[in-house]
Length: 263
Ligand SMILES: CC(=O)[C@@H](O)[C@H](O)COP(=O)(O)O
Image (cartoon, rainbow, N blue to C red; front, side, top):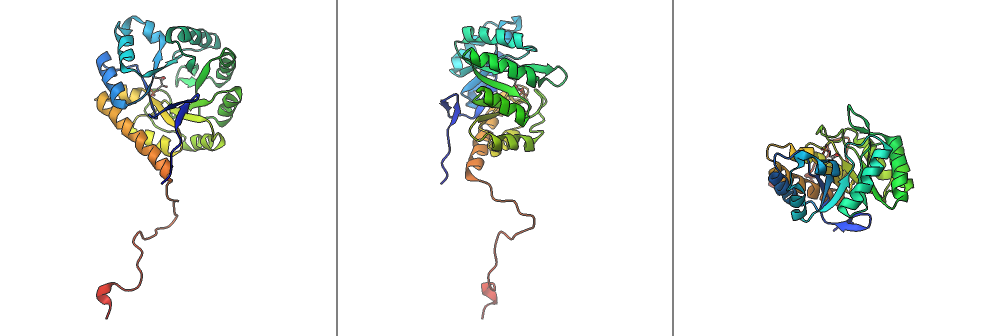
């Protein structure tokens, strides 16, 4: 029986390998029920949304009532100055030094700006933040972020909100192989539980998603489906898949003659 290694975020262990977003739900109540159904232990929230008029007064209370650990994010930021300022505000408001660093470089596909991301990460780590950078699936960018001191890296599966799944499994696999001791989380672009299974089967430690659950016909049921998906994907990774073969091989080996042909 293979034993699993725990999922850790900056030294803290979590049972659930699903990190969930808190935006775009049809109502605050559906959001809360979905968070609970997902069995996630970490929820990412945007301070910008918190402050917006549409956020609703009870939004923060509902999040608090779930008991989930909050991972503040810098969604919607486009410059180093913006993310650093917002991260500092998040640290005050949410009383945590964790920050999911989102620094968008292109408005069309919401691709992170890898150059500015490195600059911002360096500044924030020097200021004592534990940075969880949302980045592209570029090995060298991931290595540079790791060199700066990021213990957790969050390459995208696909652009945010597209639901396209893992667009480049080869890149993601290479990052996994080259950074075997870092916590790796696929963040963004997942649309189906099977995408989460695939990420976990590749050896990713966890997935972070929002739109696939919030935008589903029934977010609560989809949240539960994603919970089961990460459990299944991780179990499959730990169990180690059989090697692929190029040619067919009978799964019921035949030896000698069937018994009714004997005599
Ligand atoms: C909630 C959040 O932080 C998003 O920016 C995140 O990257 C998830 O993306 P999806 O909505 O595509 O799952």
